[in-house]
Image 1 (cartoon, rainbow, N blue to C red):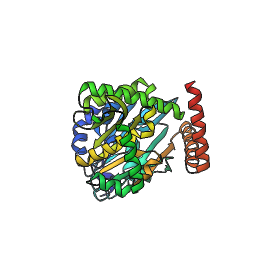
Image 2: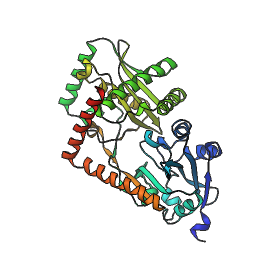
Image 3: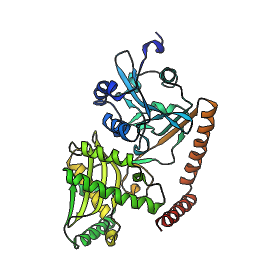
Image 4: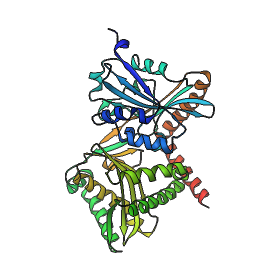
Length: 382
């Protein structure tokens, strides 16, 4: 019997139609938090409301799901694009896989299932698959078998120890730890310093507002687009925080000084993995005492006390991640045109992706790019 006759493809156009299958599959699947049903449903209801869902369930044999692909169709200018759902707020984009996918699905995905999927989808001009991890919880991502180029940024993570002291000694020198502890002691001389996890409505709204304010300032200083200028993105974070801070999926915390918020973090906790996503700090005379670093130490300790095994620093090549990480996650982009319009459009993405990658991997060019961004940020703040 050929693979074609033993693979079944189902495509759903709404979250409600696939919810039962997805939630059941997700309980044991290998995937990241950005492919969870709750994350993507909230994304579609706020940020991605104009994106048409094409939620693909791959079964082998019939009745046994082995993969879910949260795809969507969206129009960019006049180009119909096939994309991953999750967009700019999701650091990793891709499928959910059954455990041991390669053993459970013993075929070349790009040669068997992918052609069956594409012929069932509505017409599109281009494929824009971005930020696809090479590995999904240790498994090879079958979508990376499509023609891909490296994403300009990679992601970083570390395994956690059971003790904060042991973890710090493993990652940092004694001198470095002593310096940080001295800064933290100096910070405490200004008043009562507390690590607060947002659990009630007042804390959620307060810390979320502080996070957005502090992060917006940081974006402007760096000369990059402010994510929180978009009201739909703000609504996404508010809705998700209100709905999921209480069950622990959303982890919103702050470092306070006599009740004043001097640093915050908004992240996720999912399948024993902590996602370090939006760290912020207040710009004040206290910066020299590293309030953001102290908050991160508290989050390390919270993770160790609550059964988290991996601390994921997520996408971005910030230098501080090198001090803590023992894993590097490689990410890839796939740009393919299906029509003449699509070929032209994806060509621009390929060129831009190559240039960004080249700049990021050339220290002198990257330094110049950062300096230019900072100058632009200073100009915008005037």
